Length: 113
Length: 117
Image 1 (cartoon, each protein chain N blue to C red):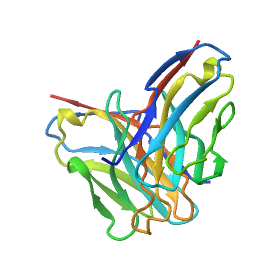
Image 2 (cartoon, chains in turn cyan, brown; image 1 turned 30 degrees about the vertical axis):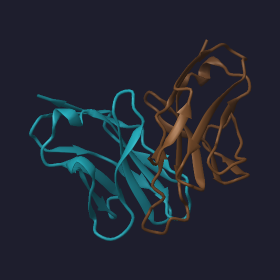
Image 3 (cartoon, rainbow over the protein chains, first blue to last red; image 1 turned 180 degrees about the horizontal axis):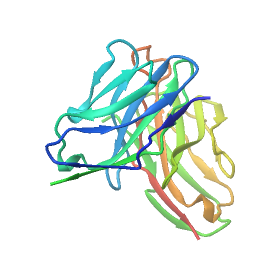
């Protein structure tokens, strides 16, 4: 069985500071990892993914994530947070062999001016 | 424009009154899925479909039905809705045959907020 853990319900950061949203995963095969963002009253939007290759992946809106196989982590990062980054962020994983996507419970990011 | 559409976007109904939430995608995706989102629980998969006439249960299928008669459509049916099915529902699609680099990235609809009283 595959699973995702987002240990923080909420992350608070001041605008201009770097941000990190944590994610750890568990799969039996090769992980396909994703980050999605949900703005209020909107659906989920894809941010970035790791399939294979370079451990540092870059995505939309200046976000990036680092795949760490030994720590089974895929933390989302951004060098300088914006107030408009405030949203609910979901990490998701699927075993490379299957199509079922398992989501974490989500982390609310609040960026203060 | 490539998109996943859901209807209705908002629905208030009463216990036991059958309802259907429609989902349609225009990307010729083989894979489609339904999720429900509840506070503190994230997204949980209800049902998914690998292709036409091929459906399977997700993590929380009880009380739901689906059908996949056409590639583009994947309706979610609640035969006898109950208050515990009050939730935000998302439909998503992807292409399982998109190659290894696609990662089967899923595209989500805008959501349907269902309230069962």
